[in-house]
Structures are given as structure tokens and as C-alpha cells.
Length: 145
Length: 248
Image (tube, rainbow over all chains, first blue to last red; front, side):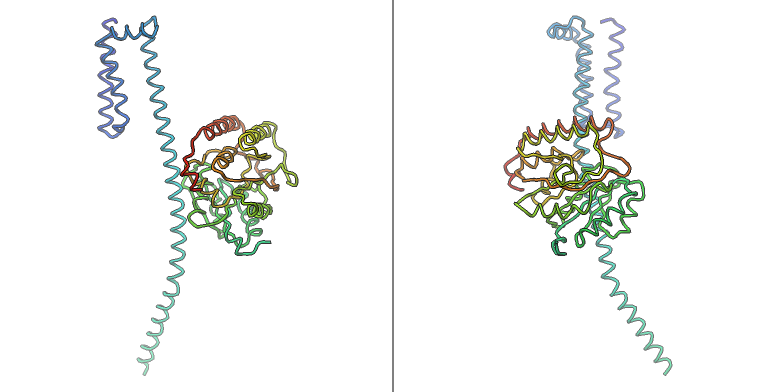
């Protein structure tokens, strides 16, 4: 690995955890999704310090150029993370669907209850109005007398 | 001829999405045929005048704040039926494709022979198909019909028909998490069979969609076929706990 490559990769390995922690701090990323990115940064850091491990891994996988191993690991990482997100998305979809259905059903129930309530209120209001009118009549009659 | 008390056990569920052109006519026809039964329109987040037309017709309305898809709207209708103790649910489209006059045929069929689910078929002898179905669509129907036959040993001429009636046993399955809400079709029949539900077909009348809209057009057809094959495979592989089977 050339010194320039080493510097660039070190910067990336430092930038990732800083960015992730900052996003968690600002509540733009939940802790449960942060760990995998921190793990990725840690792996980059390990291979930066122990480059010979990356060379060993390449030969174990039968890969001739070490850079190809890096690309392979990166592809695998994004594949796993994509699958993980798709799984979360599916779960969220189901939860949103169930929530929306429940809200819609409750709303229908509320409208029905309001109509019933108004129907029950109506005779009571009429009765109350009738009583007020009767009382007014009595008062008026009393005044006339 | 059914009396009013018998119709009261039936809920007609009509999922709708931007159906202002048809919904009024569909509701009127259902009201004429099923006097005494409740009608529930599940509005799947329409952005046109559908909801206002439905409100004027004095029926029950469940409204989604945004579009969730046909299956989710249908499932909400079944959840409503479950909560309100209806005995049967008729599901029909809000685009006027399904002839309300066929509802009594569906209802008669489900009351016979301990049947849980009756499918209104547009291809059975005695049915009336008032429009032409495209070649690819017909091919898909034949394919899924064949798969349903292989799995259930029961011939189904119209596995994609959305004109159905279900009893309480069957709609317990629809409200469960097993129900596929994006394209509930042939996979539901296989699922119903695996849960031990009995189904049959009866001839019904179906018309063309007034605006020639369909859930299965263009690229959606390919996605539909792929999704359906995957859903059938998964349904067959899925282990159904004995406890959940016994719930039905």
C-alpha cells in the first residue's frame, strides 16, 4: 500500500465514525442502524493497520489482486445492508398498513358514535327547550296577572 | 328470495380508489339487489370526488388518509366485518365490473354444502363475460388456475376474480398477517386450501371497466406474474402452526 493510499484510507476510517456519531447525536440515525457502519469503519481500520491480513485473506479466497478483495468485501457489505434495510422496510410497511387500517376503522366508529350521540342529545335538547318555553310562559303569565 | 333478516347478516365491501365515475351507480345497484344488507365503501385515499359521492348515499365508509393498495383496503373491510359480527362478506370492485345482480347467486352458493369461500367466475358455463380479455392476461389466468388445480385438486376457471363471498371462518384468514395485501389472487386460494377452507365457483356476470383501467396492465402484468409465482411458492413452503389452523 502506498503512503498516499494509507492517508486516504485513514481519513475515510476516521470520517465514517465521526459522521455516524454526529448523525446519531442529531437524531438523524438511530443507534440500531449505527453499529453496522461503525463496524465497517473498524474493519477498514484493522486492514489499514494489518495490511498483511488483507493479503492473507486475498490468497485464501484465491484473489490475485488485493484491491479486488476490498471491492468484494465492500459489495458484500452493501448487499447485506441492502437486505437488512429491505427487511426493515417490509416490517414498517406492514406496521403502517395495520396502523392506517386501525385509524380508518376507529374514525368510522367515531363518526357513527357522534351521529348516535347527536340522536340521543336531540330529544333531551328538545325537552330542555320545551321546559324553558314552558317556564317562560308561566313567568309571562304570572307577570300579566 | 332472501328476507331482510338474512340480508342483514351480509356486508358488501367495496374497495375504491378514484372511482367518482362509477361508485354512485355501483352503490345504487347493490342497494337495489341487497336491500337490508350493509354496504361498506373502503376508500383507499381517493383524490377525486369518490368519498363525497359515497357519503351522500347513506352507507358505511372507512377512509384511508393515503393510498395503501387494493389488498389493504379489502382487508380493512374484513376487519370491519369481524368487529361487527357479520356472517358473510361480499367483496366487489367499485369500478362497475361486477354485476350486483349476481350477489344472490354467490350468497345461495355459500349457504350450501358448508362452503367457506365462493368465487364469482366469468368463465364458467352460465356466466356472462361482457368484454374481451387480452391474450397475456388469459395466459396468466390459465397458468395460475393450473397451479391452483395442482395444489388443491380443484378446478378454478377464474382464479383472479375479485368478486367473492366469504363466511366468518374464511375472513378470519383474510384479517390475519398471512393475507398478501398487494395482489391477493390465486395465492389466497392456495392459502385458504392449506388452512382447510372449502371453496367453489359460481357463474356471474362481469362487464368491462368503464375507463379500461386494470391492476394488471403494462409492466405491472410482469410484476404481477412474478409476484404471484413467488407468493404461491412461499405459501406452499410456509409452515402453518396447528394452533392457527384450529383458530379457523
